[in-house]
Length: 193
Image (tube, rainbow, N blue to C red; front, side, top):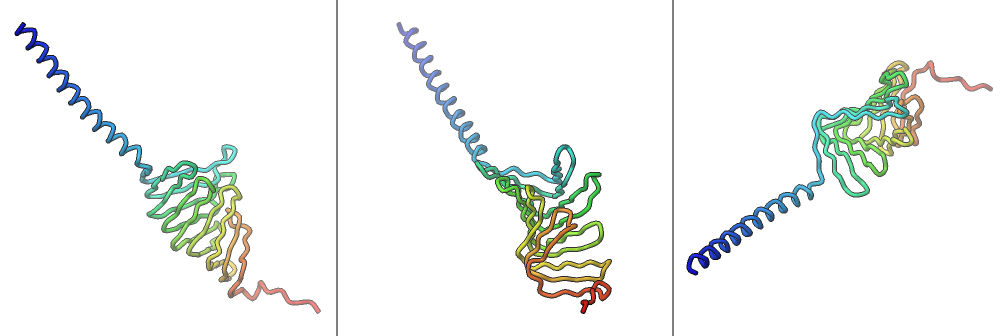
């Protein structure tokens, strides 16, 4: 009876030790998984995002760093170290560029908000400068309510104003409230009597 008793005691001790060890490991694994599941941020470096419509590339984003914040119903991409956005024509030729110090893209609204020394160029060397510019992916427009400066070195024009809206390749634009401008004298059309 002494040997059976000691075998049962040994088996009991081994089972208790085994369950205790397993439960501690299981708790550690569950804690580790819970921490990783709580993490809603993905980070990437040297990012290139291509936007296409009917298999035709329309825009490309380049960024040194992107942080993707995943939240139910509205995830966002944050570009904390700058962004270069290129707009292409149907022949995949870059027609305009947008550079900014930071940017945020909201998945729900399909808008990219670029901030900090935002500069836009087109293939005709027109340059638009502002502190904030919003690109609407659905409407394919860019706009701001901030102060803008538009220079056209070909014509020698510089225009300042508040509020700006343009199509994504900057071929058509409007300034909502013009503050001042400098025009080339050749562009002035005389009034007819």
